[in-house]
Image (cartoon, rainbow, N blue to C red):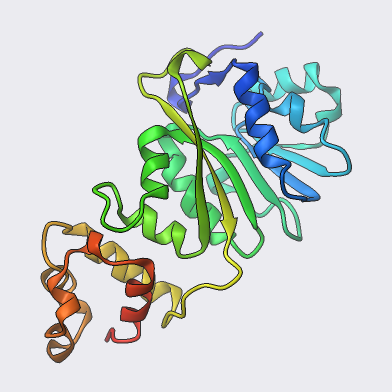
Length: 250
């Protein structure tokens, strides 16, 4: 068998019904290349390797788990990338789908990595800590709407699929989990540049209790800051509002 490593945020899925629901959500759309992030003990992997006519790879940093997977699922030989997902290069040359029970301690960083790869990643099905999943899916005006919501929703449609109870894992985490699905948008709102967009969104939410005028003062000329939208707070602005504002930045 294998041991659990708290340092890697390992909580292994054991509920077969949840595994099957994740795979069912995944195969609703066609794809031919799939990467699993953090396969761990193979709860999802054993279903994923049975999906017909796809190329499959997994990224796993834990050598013990890699050895366990290879010994239990011989078809995984040469299909496991031994490194942290955060340090990885795109595992395929063309488009690929991503799936995973993401380690909660780096799940936000995983999302930002996926955003870097968005031109190659049309779909993601992932499990997150429930409050993170809710934040990603939150609409403007919601109290948990924030940087993650805006940056992900600028490029992907987000669908919250279902909750996952603590007892579905070994060991049970102290929090509930949620599974979401991301579909890359066909068209995005025009923006001056992605860099301007990211800088603006992060600045606006960095001081979310302040008005936009005070939170983003260094990014705009004084005349622009007199516009009425700057009297709002960050959570009141839509993705399009942020995109439109990038054209007025210094």
